[in-house]
Every structure is written in structure tokens, then in C-alpha cells.
Amino acid sequence: MYFNLNELSVLYLGFKLFILSELMIFLSLFGSYLNHTLLSLTFSSLFIIYFAIPFSNLLILLYSSFSIQSSLIFMKFGFLLNMVEGLSQTIGIGILFVILQFKEFLFSIYTYSTSFIGTILYFTTGLHGLHVGVGLILLLFSFYVSLMFSLNSSSHTL
Image (cartoon, rainbow, N blue to C red; front, side, top):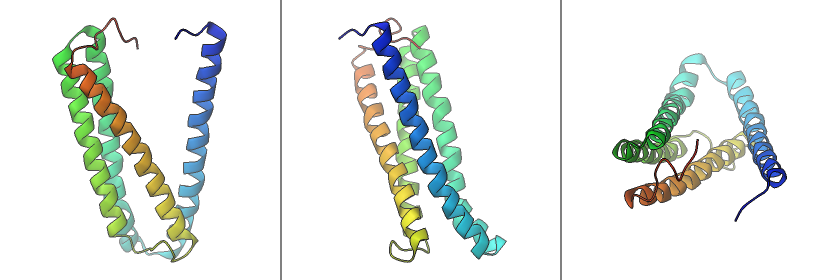
């Protein structure tokens, strides 16, 4: 299926608006969550309970952006084995993130019915976990396609 330039610009605009709306939802929900937790806890308990696992998840997601970007660069220059390695690193990091996300659910002091803060916590973490799960499925598909060596530098542009 081919698109003309006007249809493509509308698709790009729609994608950018989707990402912007997702960002605004996450910022508003996490902002209300952090506002409540920063006003109700001491600093030592706040750091141990609320920043240990989420901070490690942040570092994991930052590293995954580097590994997937290196995979794309390797694909552009035709280094297919390095591309597969970058994809497999990113998939492994995504699985580790989902495991840590599950641990964050288990060790949370809130329940879903505690207050609105528990609801916001579980909603945002679950929504983000779903987002990562869909990304993992897409990465697994890309990994399968790259193992069949049907991806190369001419079939994909950056």
C-alpha cells in the first residue's frame, strides 16, 4: 500500500498527537501521585519504598533506548549480527523491566481500593506495563524477521 505525501503527513501528525496525548496522561497521573506521596512521607521511607525500584526501571529503560538505537544503526550499515544482538539485548531488558514492574506491584504499600492514590498508582503502572508489553511483542516480531534475514539496510530507512 502506498501513500501520497498529504496522507503521510496526516499519519505523522496523528502519530505525534497520539504520543503527545499519552505523555500528557502519564504526566498528569504521575504528577498527582507524586504530589500526594511527597506531602505524606518522610524522606528515608520515601526513597526506599518509592524510588528504589522505579529508579532502576528508569535506568533500564534508558539503556534499552541505547540498545535499540544501536540496533537500528547497525541495520542501516548492514551489520546484521550486531543488529540481532542489539534487538536481543532490548528484548531482554524489556522482560527485566516487566519483572521489576511486577515486583513494584507486589511491594507497594497501596492497594487498588486504598484511596485515589492507589488507583492512580495501579492505573499508571499497569498502563505503562501494557505499553511495554506491546512494545515487546513488536520487538519479538522484528527479532523473528531479522533472524530470517529479511531485514536489511535497503528494506528499512531511518
